[in-house]
Image (cartoon, rainbow, N blue to C red; front, side, top):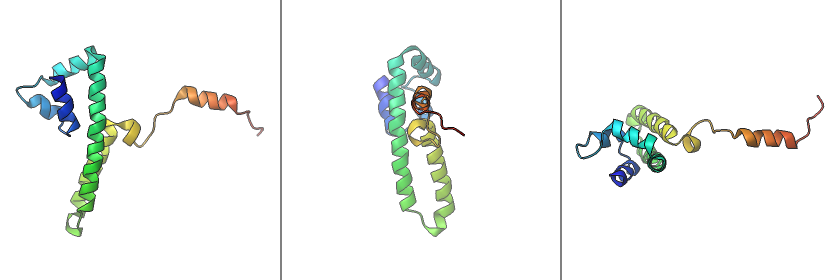
Length: 116
């Protein structure tokens, strides 16, 4: 069951759509599994990263097919894909990259303060 979820997520299907399938677990069951089983949560996160990459590829295909007549609709689609990819894999596709606090403190400690 878990492998099916990972495969379907990796192919770009939403978790909502997967959980609507009568042969699959409900959203609440998947949420419980993610909280209870760290390896399941890790696999879902990895599948979400693959899904984000697929959305980027899809965005490129959509952008290549744009015409003057479809430009506005294409922009709307691309904005949604960009937002979704950033939500699925923020460290890779988000606008703001996470900062490692320890690394920043170490760099500041290593470089002497400049007189003002």
